Length: 293
Image 1 (spheres, one colour):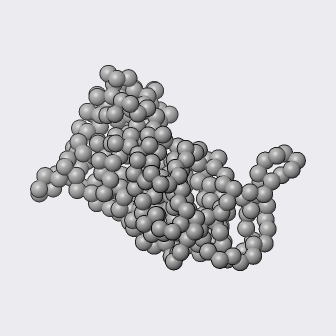
Image 2: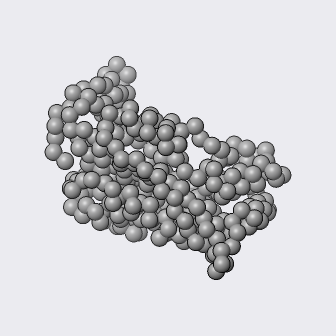
Image 3: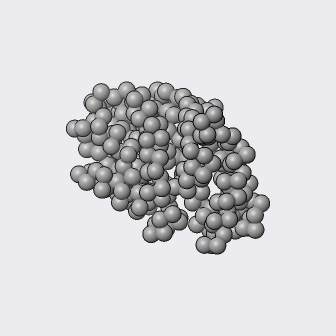
């Protein structure tokens, strides 16, 4: 584990050990974006820049920006794509002063609270005809996550780890996403894919999540507790993920995808309208005229 990176954020180096596997969902998502051109694109939750690279590759003439709340991830992204702008931002309060032709959000919305509200807000940041492309893991019922929570609740650390419980979230099923997307008044494409990743063994599954979800637990443990926690987790994984004929284990990763395309003429929320009485930006319903993408 890279001790130079605070345990409160995802570990960029650990995350990139499985770069090819982690980038594939982003590539599959980009392949379903129906735009033929885009002038301004933004990658929210850009991580180490692997997804941003896909956006730039698809739209090389566009102005492409990356946003993330992790300094470690942003540092890797700037090393990778030095000519682009990457900004540290809290996505729960992010409010741009411009619209976008593409908002790309691969593997980030599941980390944010009140996702239906944020989803509606993101759509309002699109140009007419623009797209919001989203991919989120749907893994709370997978053994990898159930066992993570079980080990956290069964050990001597149960009290301190209770707040970090992964748990099953109230918004995340296909039906819930479908209902939320219908409320946007936009056209959308919604689908689900389960990826099967052959890994070297249960220890590789531990390594996979050490760069992401496990860190919510590890940051609360002492230096003495972390090895014991990881040892118990790996032992539980050994029973849940039997070895295949060649000795590898299959890590299942179900993911939900959707691409929302904003209509060129519809009543929309103007994201940057201001309330002069309070000095706060507010949304107001306005009739949007058609614009070119």
